[in-house]
Length: 325
Image (cartoon, rainbow, N blue to C red; front, side, top):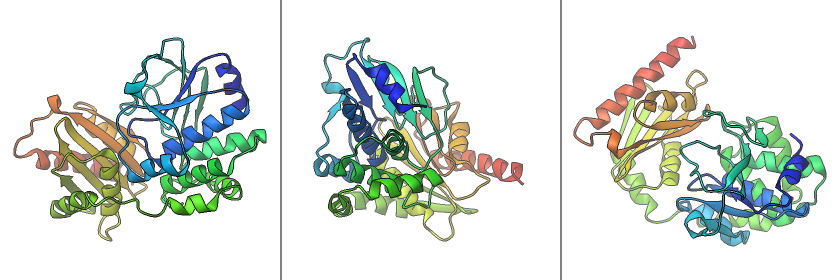
């Protein structure tokens, strides 16, 4: 797609750039970068999200890069005529609230699970959505502010886990491109003070409740744990030398939230979660990382739930392993 086509579509409209709910650094960097790109071409857009900002690293981005973001609940004047660009997510996904405005465009690096027609569609497999936004500047020779470049560099590094997860040649090329233009001091600042004391409780609970079955590390957190922290703990469980697939979940008031990771080429994390939860909830994601959710009305939170979760995931994992031999 030609990114200048997106500029043409948005001109003359009131525009919003919507990240997925509970935005992470890649989502925020992508939205911030896109906002700057559009502004350079004479189009204004406000960044918005639904849910809450859970990661300390995301909150720190707002401060370090001085990013103005609107919570959906604070937007009182959005109408059906207003345009929305979805970044780092797609319409109809469980992690993107359907706001009043018209989702005319989508820029994302995740697989598509629910087809949708957009006026502008840029959905490609890369390690980070920030990579796609960086390429917009590169392809159109659009000037890039040093702060924007630093944010995009941080987004790429975070979503590729420092270039070891889902990384593509384009991720590497665009990181080189933005890093040369980045405010490196701001980038360095993002690596300090990004863990909260309360996070240790969730780590401790996961460690207390870990169980390993044939290379699959299961861990449950009996706390009202935020999505972002569950994902961080899933990465932590995967780092164990006896684990190549991690399934971490928190039993919360509203249901059960899952974060899944896979280092195996024969086990696609996104397809696995989507299959396991298709009759009771929703889920999806990448080959290496995925998430899912079962609402409370679809589960019976009694003794035995952990055994049922383990059985369902192990059954699908074994099917994938056999099917890819």
